Amino acid sequence: ILNVEQSPQSLHVQEGDSTNFTCSFPSSNFYALHWYRWETAKSPEALFVMTLNGDEKKKGRISATLNTKEGYSYLYIKGSQPEDSATYLCAFPGTASKLTFGTGTRLQVTL
Amino acid sequence: DGGITQSPKYLFRKEGQNVTLSCEQNLNHDAMYWYRQDPGQGLRLIYYSQIVNDFQKGDIAEGYSVSREKKESFPLTVTSAQKNPTAFYLCASSTDRGVYGYTFGSGTRLTVV
Image (cartoon, rainbow over all chains, first blue to last red; front, side, top):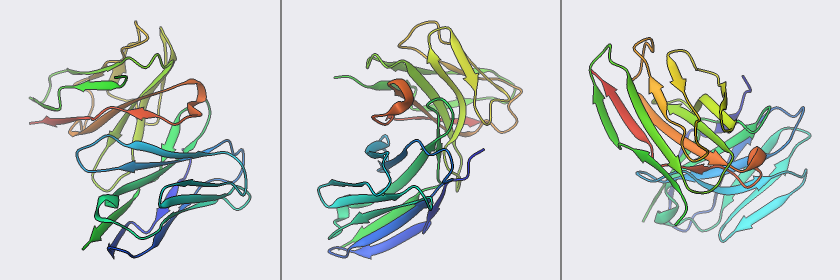
């Protein structure tokens, strides 16, 4: 079983704050790294699928970076808004297309 | 609209009974997956299927069974052999190797009493 770790486990920020979380994964046999956002009572939604070392992807105020050699990825949220409140999951594919998920970072943004 | 439908949203069963959770997708995805979530834990893979009439055990397959008779359907049966069946179950699908990410259903919360 692959080891995918996320930190922190939870985070509470105020509206307008910028924040970031970490995902660490095995650096050998790298294929891709996925980020998902999971809002309460909704389905997890894919944010990014990252494949290249040094890659940086952006979607609105959310961006992610990838370091495959050291086995980590950062997710950044600039100017957090209440609608950013969700659990953010990273996932690492092992053999075939099956993903191993981290336990997630739960973000709460308050006014 | 394309997507994944899981039903029902909530399910209650008595201990010792088998129960089947439905998962249907109209995305024409080849691969489908079942995950389980318990409090404080990440999503854990139960079974996955990359093609019709073929499926593989995931990390926690004991006490579960699946079938993949049609591309769009991947039902999960929780058998009486599953020691702790009460959990939240998520179904997902993807194109080959998930290069565009997974698409998830909205989940089924199973409670066994």
